[in-house]
Length: 190
Image 1 (cartoon, one colour):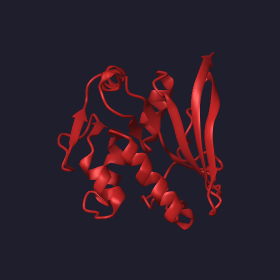
Image 2: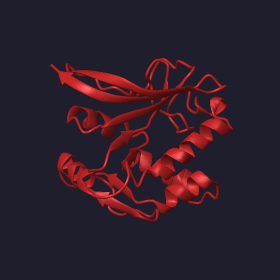
Image 3: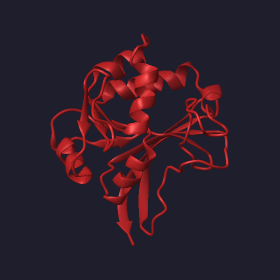
């Protein structure tokens, strides 16, 4: 069974919206000042370890616009790997190796997890991540926490009455102040 790894960029106040310059957020691009060679290499290594991406429509469109034509190692890796895109509005996908998932979300994800291969990586896609949390489908949270608070935006964790306990598996502090943390869920209760 494949592991599902959620890998967001988040602020200290838990916001995952607009780290890369997406329009509409008052502090869009908040991650850029902190991403250096070490952080970029970590994201390359993370993509190389994964065997597929799971994306929502908004993240897919952002990634396709930013990585599909890129020639750096991260862009090349993301372009070559399978991308499973969950959307009820898209009818076709232009970025190579992309497939559209438009059926029952939970069942589609369970089928993906039962396949062969390495981890399925979910980089962003807040509404998709909230559904994954709701249905207890996440095996690992691998987040980069940035030393900035932006006050508003989509939060990483859903607003839910469910309590989830996590075990810290690994952490790393980068010179920029960014902290990589790997958390694994160990129990859930209402």
